[in-house]
Each structure stands twice: as structure tokens, then as C-alpha cells.
Length: 84
Image 1 (cartoon, rainbow, N blue to C red):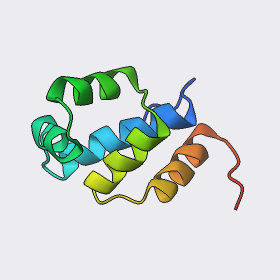
Image 2: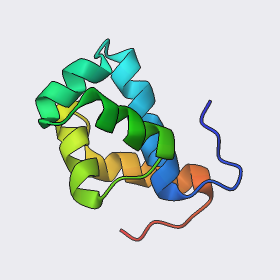
Image 3: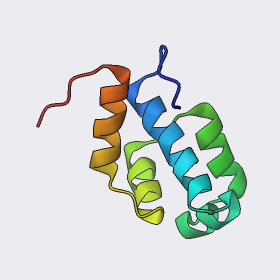
Image 4: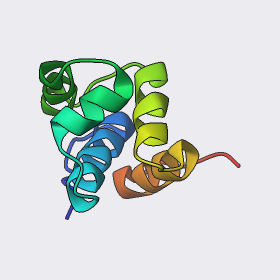
């Protein structure tokens, strides 16, 4: 279950990406290779629950995940309203 207490939408979305990385059997090293960055950078982004929008979208694409759907789910979990 995703931790939503005092978590922002972006933090929840990044946590979801980290969980999906594991669920898809993709290592941080493999993800880093797809993104053209180091494994340490991937680990740092997941640990800090922080990344730029471009990095977030690129990570979603690398994982074959729809970024908009992920943000919508994260907003719902955070109790936020999503404009459609």
C-alpha cells in the first residue's frame, strides 16, 4: 500500500514508479541504462521522492507507464482534486 500521510502527489507518483520498477522486474541498473543516467541517480531520485517533470515523464516512458494516469491516481490517493 502506498504511504499517503503527509505525502504530496509527486511523492506518491514517484513511489508508484519505484514499485512498478520492481513489479516489472526491472533493476535500477536497467532503468538507469534506459534513461542514460547512473544507477546512483535513479536510487537518489527514488529515495528523495523528487524529480523534475521531464525526468518523471522519461521514467514513465521507460517503464511503459502512462504519466497522466499515474498522476491522476496519485492525486486521488493524496485526496486532491484532479481537473479533467
